[in-house]
Image (tube, one colour):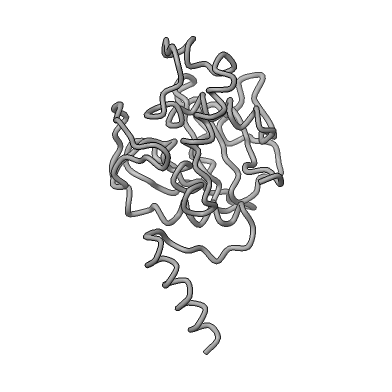
Length: 208
């Protein structure tokens, strides 16, 4: 009876909010569950520039890029809006971000900034969430331990294309949820061995 009432409460939250309710206890577990909930929902990949509402803007959930996996997991699992957080930090410190150097941006753009992995890496580093960053070519499955559920990993695919995913299980076989171009999928970390590891982040910090 107690289990039924708990499940009923979670269902009520889901119906009321339009988003899934997660029963996980830690922030990392909530991020991991919210990432896994995107499997079978986001089945496409679309990197095109799209005008978004602000805050809380999103492209259709059936599609997106790798960064959208993390953005949606943060919103669904933790109620944190990376679109708003990254934009506010870029307004404060635009020159700390690679936007001008890499994309020739002249000012923050709420439509795209948070959907770019290099900007997310800069934001997480600035808020103290970076645990490790590669300072030499490192295989994409060779992150230093410990790795925990909910940790965020970044890569350079083919040693050049930024990519991001969320750890959904850690231990003897670490697994990651990400969108590499086929929609949201779950892969063993070992599958990234041919690529280069870039960064390891644990966000949000205890201050959130």
